[in-house]
Structure formats: C-alpha cells, structure tokens
Length: 344
Image (cartoon, rainbow, N blue to C red):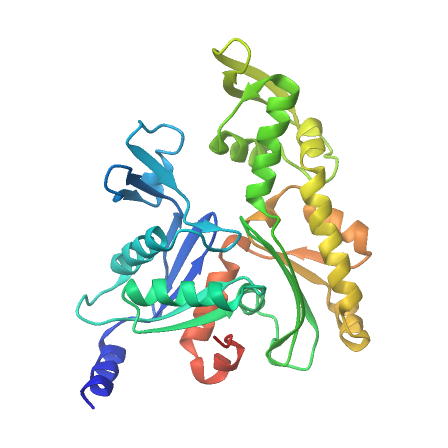
C-alpha cells in the first residue's frame, strides 16, 4: 500500500517527461511546459576514474580538443544505448535539469527505433529507471514523428513517415494506431559525416574532425544538384606534412561523397513501399510522404525522394522536434494515445 501511495503522490507532484534520446541530440519535453532541453548527446569523462566532467553543449565544445585524461563519449549508437553507465548519467542530468521536485520521480516516455531489440529495450528501460524515472514507457520514433506532424495515426488511413536521425533512418506506414510496415536502416547523419571525413582524407590528404564534417554537410551538402553550387574552405591537418592545412571544396564534391548513404535511404524507402498493402499504398499516393529528423534538412533530399518514388514528398515543419513533440502529445493524453506505446 505504501508503494502505491508513493506512486500516486509522485504522479501528483512531479512533471512527466518525454525524451527523444537521439544518437546526435537529446530533446526533453515536460508535460505542461513544452520542450525544455535540446542538447547534444555527448558526455565528457575523466579517464582515470570515469567521472563525468561535462554533458550536452559543454561536452560538445570539447570534442576533438581534449587532453589525454579527458575523453568525450557519445553513449548512443544507431539510436540505442551503447554505453549503459554513461547514458544513465546523461539521462539523469537531463531529468534533473527539468524536474521541479527532486523528492519525486517522474513518469518518462522514451523514443526508440522501430527495429529495437528486446535486449536494447531492457537496457533503455533500466538506464531510465536508474536515472530516476518512476515508470518508463517506449514509443517507436516514426509513430512519435507522425503524431508530431499531426497525422491521423488513430484513423483507418495510411500515413507514411521517414524519420532520418543521427544513427538510423526509420520508415513506417501507420494506420489505426499501429505500424503496418516498418523499415529501419542504420544510416543517418553520422554516416554522412563519416563519408565526408573519408572523402577529405582520400582526395585531399586532409584529416578533419567530426564537427568540421558536420559543418560541411550542413553548409554545402546536398542530395541533388543545386541551382547555384556552393563552396567553402575546410580546415584540418595535412596527413603528409603533418601541419595545419585549408582547402576549398564544392557542393558537387560533397554530393559525390554523400551518394552512398543517400542511396541507402532511397532504397530503404522503395523497399518499404513494396511491402505496403495496396489499400494503404493508395492513401500514400493521395496524401504523400512526410520526412522528419535532422537528416531531412540535407538540401534536396525531399526532391530526390520525390523523383525516385514519383510520390508527393514533403519536409515537416521544424523536423528536428517532430519526434519529441509527438511523444509529448502521448504524454499529455495517455488515455487516448496510450495504445501507440510499444510493448516491452
């Protein structure tokens, strides 16, 4: 009885939380307050005792600039937890940042890839509970994204969502509060950054860091030819001379570098469409496809998908927050949307 009373009081005096625990960024939505945290999923630790030195933006500033005793870690890989202890510390820090009452434990909904395994679910659930969550629920990222853009997920209507995150691309056809078909590929923004690093190494003998690669992708990366091709200067270390070096690169070159991950995403979308039942495929033909996630911001990606599928493809408004906003909708109305949550 005492335990149930404690849970009841915890529900009355704590803010429930929705977390988009992403490979690249973590967003936290608090019931009644909206999105209060948008920070990189990065933790800086001291190697000697694994003590956390910084989390989020502070840790992101240290990437590639630390001395031998400080190590920056991204505890998420391919959309799931890769380092349990560090992920737990990160989740605890973000929960602490938004909790109004430190004496009670919040109820938490966490977004996960639709292809998450039972073992990965258990790790996420345990990490959140150890970090201070009273109850933990999981929701598939494409379902949360669909809710976040206002699609009628609980209606007998086919809706298709493509959520391109840092570690994975999630493609799902949704109807009647469930995922009818889903395709999850471990290709996203991180792989795009990595192929840019390799391109610069291979073609210019220039070693660049992940932050520089991400900047190149965001500034001049594209999936289709641009009306006006862009250029920028990339700085790094000359692999032959071993000294700092700067080279000018163009959007044409970076598009060539990004060809493989972009093609992987296009192929996954086509595969998902092939698996879609005909009645739902007709709905998608009429209603189109919505693209969300940070990777959706790659220039020309929606256009490339439109050309490859011959279907209407639209970029969601504020694609970076669609998943956490959709999770927040579930949090605000569990009675109506509770059935979209995943079974553990």
